[in-house]
Length: 217
Image (cartoon, rainbow, N blue to C red; front, side):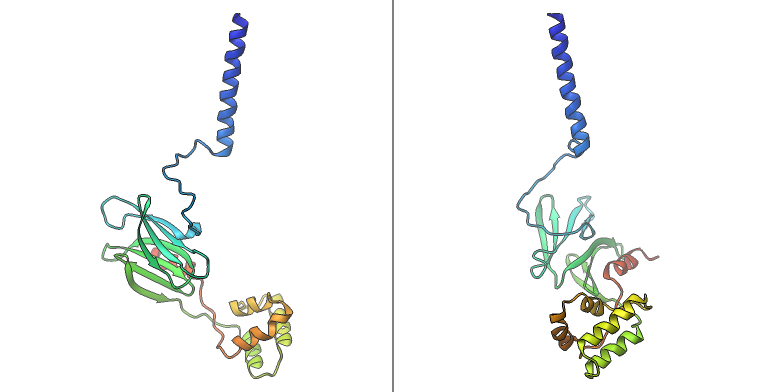
């Protein structure tokens, strides 16, 4: 009888120990789910999430740059508790969201999107910073100019850009050229026709510039 009780006790302890080990491995038990919404329909990245006391009342709001479908209906959403308190439409996909204190000791929100940094104060548009232009590779620019004047065709343009890319050119190629090099052969001509009249430009990355603005002394 005593042996049977001991065996049952050891069996229960083994089950508890196995469950505890399984929980530690899976991460369960390390967090308490304060709120779970399986139909929140939020599409975002960690760089587009921040927490900040926007009103100075000790209540930190959750800020999320929602990419939505990735083509339209992008929004900056501010959560108070588990409810959306504000929604601000965005013109383009957000790549970074962060809250910071302005020189006047007032909270503001910075949203990096495309080649701009949008500043929101009291949850309203306050300022738009355009990222500065960078130097363009002269050989790359010459190739696009030749394509513009129909001196070379899109296939020759691709060959020239591939040669530049493989030679580790400095300054590096623009986003336009890098996108062009990834196209299928049948897409080269329409892409060239659309973009060759537009001046070539290269700008700094939005997220890097965002961090510079906020943390620079």
